[in-house]
Length: 135
Ligand SMILES: [Zn+2]
Image (cartoon, rainbow, N blue to C red; front, side, top):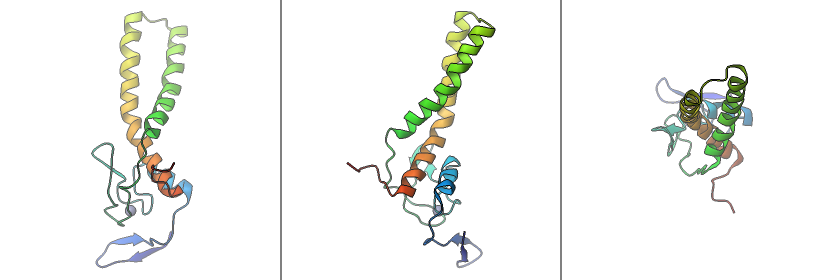
């Protein structure tokens, strides 16, 4: 990545160089700006920043809509369902324990993964030049 000095001690990446897809996606998983990796993509849990606070990259026009929740459900489902089946086969816990543990575990994982998936989707859309209003 090419960096240049600005006024003072701050450095920001050269805005004319677009990072690779893998770099943008990795920054999305960290909920960081796809362009510079220093600013935030999201604020207040799931709101997309209007623009990056570090490099000024415009992000507020990107609407990920339902893709982050779908992605989150797929990931959490692939974690919870095998654990449920394994525990049923190995431990055979009482039904009331299963009715308590699995919904709570699912909810906790959904809340944890949703902002990560949203950052991933926003950065993917940014890299592909999508805004979310394409026909
Ligand atoms: Zn930035």
